[in-house]
Image 1 (cartoon, rainbow, N blue to C red):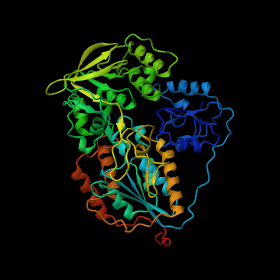
Image 2: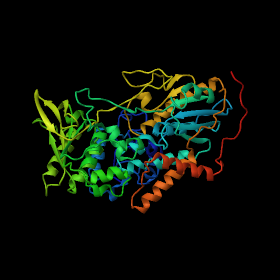
Image 3: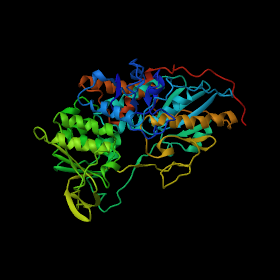
Length: 539
């Protein structure tokens, strides 16, 4: 087995296209690709060429001879997939469809609202067409969305996808307009008057609520707020995160819930080389939390966390950094279920050796009913099998999912938290992509195929003839462009290197603006642009 996928996959399928013998599955178009937690390398077909490692934007593919002890369980995961899903009938070639070309000459300008993975993959697809230039707008002063503000700082391998985003930014015709709050600074109609097409890639910024008494008490926070806090999102730095009690509770059993639980229980020394923001790092270093309880309403077979995330947790347990307790209320774990089997392994491994100073309890079949306290969180009332009890805790984290918010000027389905559309088209000239299109599901790379679908609708409408915009996008005060972002990125990396970490995230908005503005004043506007083309008349 020459190569193995060793983490939750970004699922952008770059490795599938790069593989010359079609040995990575499930591939786009195959059953299960959209839902796959990761991809798998066929040990019988792999020719050990290494093309997949070059293509992978997050460095997930590793030769089997270089697996660390923590990564070795991925060997069995990979083998088991091909036991259940043999692919001997696959043609030994990854088929790449011919690049589509526009029939109309352009030039065309497209605005993409949202600089997260969905927005940048959309920009990448659009910029394959030399007739199109793209402005990517975001209300924040820095791009990359949840990759920057949501991925746990100790998961630097996942954050490596930003190298791919940096390559997208290098393309002719790409421009940032960061610090523009569409809906406040300017409206959707303003954008439609300035661009041939507008794509909303605004994600699902809202956090779902528990709907129980007391969840607004100080010390009850959403996972969205908490991840923004420890990742250095400026508006989250004043978040009240009480860490003065021995127990915290995380409600939810997804990957984000495990991320939060791990960050609250991890040895602070393990964060010293990461991109964690300084204030949260200091707070976690002084934390009194010694136990985090992760609550799931249903059993482990229904948990949303992935097998790769559990394998990563196993690595912490194997080296004695953490103890995991699995509480099913007396129900047996199903050895045929991969998640249950891994949880059983984690629990058994935790019984070996000295007891670590911190414990993570994964408790299933438990429903939260009330957050307790008067001036702050003091505990959480829960029920299981009709029996009520109280878990004393100083912090309760709600990690039960995201929900999209209405986009001013667009229709909205409150039940799904999405904008109604057909293959990404809201109406000719207006489009959606990412979580605001499909809901909060999928992985980082899921946005690649999602963007391709939306861009196909845009190209159809450009070919059919969209009305030309009335105006050219003009300057906006306080907007940060690509050179400004590059300066911020370089300064964060420089400061991080001086401290022996990957980056030192800057959280002060005024400082971010100063760094960006100084760079943009120094740098003349010399970025390559699209070759001019004859402008068509208004339809």
